[in-house]
Image 1 (cartoon, rainbow, N blue to C red):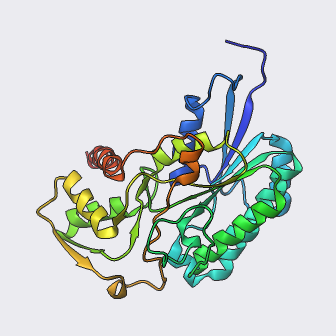
Image 2 (tube, rainbow, N blue to C red):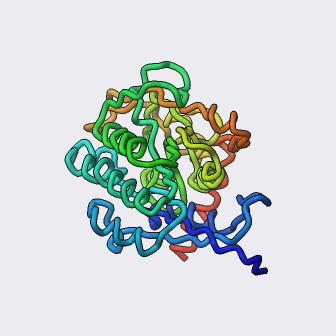
Image 3 (cartoon, rainbow, N blue to C red):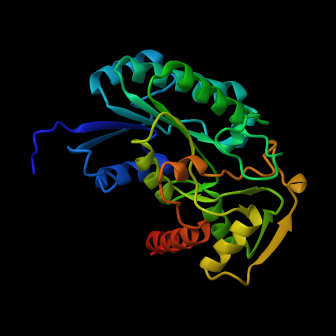
Amino acid sequence: MDNGTPPQRILVTGAEGMLGTDLCAALRTGAWRSQDQPGDVEVVGLDLPEFDITDAADCRKQMAELRPHCVIHCAGYTDVDGCTREPLKAYMVNGDGTRNVAEAAESVGAQLVYISTDYVFDGTKGRAYVEQDTPNPINAYGESKLLGEEHVRQVCGHWQIVRTQWLFGRHGRNFVAAIVEAAKRDGRVRAVNDQFGSPTYTKDLSELICQVISLPTGVYHATNSGRASWYDVAAAALEAARLSEVELTPTPASEWPTPTARPAYGVLGNAALRAAGVPAARPWEKALAEFVDTYLADWRTRVA
């Protein structure tokens, strides 16, 4: 029904990625809008090659044409080991690219929601990080994302920074799917047992981000509830996939083949969301079980 109110246009960068795909779907349902938010929502999703965040002129041009009310910036260089190998690319995409998006959004008066990471912290606190904790990244990915955060704070008048971690979802590469695939292929898997975080389903994260849009300017941590090691996640994935007979070997991070130092304890506390009245997301175990069921159904369709 037309109530005479023009649609609110929301632009999602990185719209074809694992988070961006689920986020666009969640935004389009409109279920997150309250009764005091009249009007429809028009969701515009952009990704490479039509939208290159490292091209400042293109960012300004497209923002001027679209004139969104809100920009949710999901695009970035998220390959953590890739960032270690190519730090200049990491800073160019996650740092300079975010500045380009922020400046373009501010030029049309748009709100900016920036998706960041637990990797801005060093993992030495020993308990959950809250939004007020001082960042101290220990790798190029974390440094580049923190640089993006700083640009958002400096450039934008109305912004939210959403830090999250350990994502899994239907529309991209992730640890949970990799574990199930390796178990089916090899009959045995290894997983790190001394790094901890909050595994987060992109479907649930998308619903939290939808709530963040209407919150005041600030930093928000957004994850599924609970904490786990990678070993815990692997064990839960194998159980959900009914592959409990597969050999699962706990492995210390020091023996894992990676060029990147990672936080040992990067768990994010969602205190700011709770204070704002946003209900806690479901436990990661329940979210993971749902994802694995969906993943297996998709896999059966592909091989049929």
